[in-house]
Length: 221
Length: 135
Image (cartoon, rainbow over all chains, first blue to last red; front, side):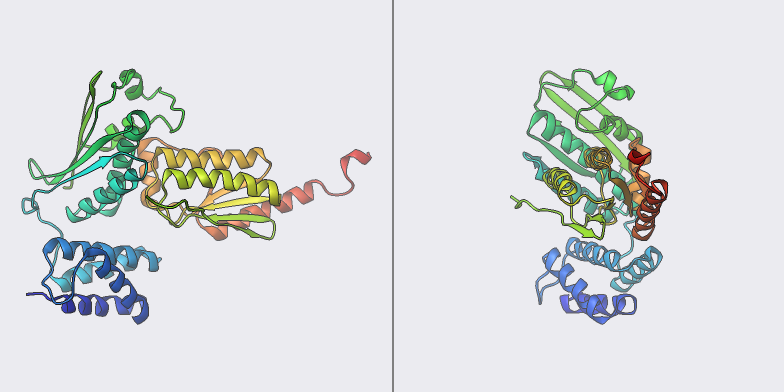
């Protein structure tokens, strides 16, 4: 059984040689606050993962050397007894972010990034996927107003993430032009959907007068 | 609901420095665009450095706005450079087919600052001697 005190203590000790005692303590405290672990309880695996993500953000903010940061995080995972998720063991998760205003874009991309970290995606992939989620959410806010983003974990054929963006708008009128890359956007670069298609492993779009549904997947391994 | 935030614009001698260290929402970048244009008019700097080392996700709207900011300030006659692009962000931008055309990129703040200084020296050397209208 792991207690909160143990987790905090372990993190403190692991971080200290890298960032110094004071910074280590403050990073740990912030991470504890963010993941909702309360004193005296036994943290759930999700909470531990949230805690590790919080620590990682802190460590990367304070350590300019990314190799050191990687090493520090690897040690912490080892000390806490959590490795990366092995294929097939990831619990099925579903997160739904209702998109109603511009700030929901920020929240959707944050959630997708956390989920990717949990699934064991390496950092560059996490950033790519979060960018994609940001693009899809932005299209909803900009062209329709409201919609939703669903983030699902997939386990077959491989571990990965599935992003479903749906809205009830009037559809994308010139979808062929958009996907051909010759579309000129007034506010963006005109590459949101095309970029999504390029970066993801799987991309399906269904757009008509009743709305648009985009399903896209990226596999971790 | 998040309160309107302004990203600070720092004047260092004749250079304006903007360091983006917060999670960017559309409103914040929009506000930044206005703020920079106004500050340039008020201060009359030689150079503008946009440091994006704190930006971990840049989608097409954000990169478009940063590019716009660069182009606006260049049009106002201010040498504009961007620095500190995160490697993961750079990879994503390239793979998605986005670019920051019109804004000179530099690895970090020191390099950016040196570029502005070099530009300033070139300008001064180029205009050496008496002003053209006296000839």
